[in-house]
Length: 367
Ligand code: G6P
Image (spheres, rainbow, N blue to C red):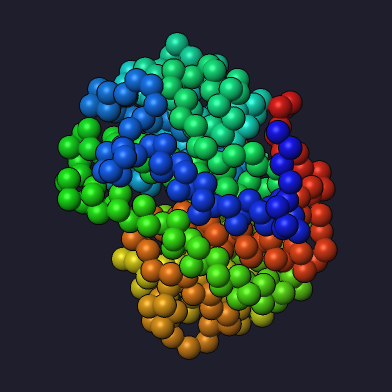
């Protein structure tokens, strides 16, 4: 099937804009008709018989796994190890009984991820994959393949596949929590209801595109950028930095906010924009302290938060980008959008090839 840009300037813009619809579609595939039960395709995993997940992936899919670690551990009480496929495959990691190996891949053909899967084959209790291409090698070689239903993704920098991966991984974490008796029916119902309204929330956020354009124009004159995030926002900070370097070629790094003092603070001066991703959650006060440390050294803070966070951040913040309020557990899916839009508009402002960035391939099928 031929895919066109549907009136957008780039495939990436189209794929960003499609997210509310494809996430809604993915939810449709994984929820019962009344939206109250999570249904997996194929056989159910016995979550009471397992004691650990090992998640392996590359690139953006790896950051989806890092996010899932927070969800599985906090919501389902299941320990999760996350690794980059190229490291995992050669380390010969021991696999203990009760481990489920989970591989996340948009293409389902990434060479290192496939090799890591083959290493686990026969060693783990089950092989699960989260893929966009349902007939891919990774899907075929899994005991259970969970499609993300994002539709064809053409832009080299992954966008809608990432948010659909997150959606499916969160549903899996919730399913595990339910099976293990780690979540009340009421809390589960609340979270599923919040998930069902997430596409609308994403649409609201998307209406603020002009603000991202303005912020990106400022960012496009920098040679460097630092992303900070804490908790669920740490993997998102990593994803924001990856997106920015991939398509705008601005050198970007990401750190867990609490690591600021252990090195990156040495980089802070008036030429270092620091993008802080922080909804006003339980950890927000700690993030405010980190922002103050940056501002005290002349660093320029671009804060991406909700209205309450923006109000509580106090004086001296360089730029603020206000996101709609969201149930904190779901914040990674919503905050993927500013990570993508900032990178996209910065690349457009710099005039780089957004859909085909230099030196990168959509799918890395050779080592
Ligand atoms: C390449 C792409 C990335 C992608 C990564 C993993 O580096 O440019 O966008 O995240 O491969 O690809 P996969 O298909 O396994 O998700």
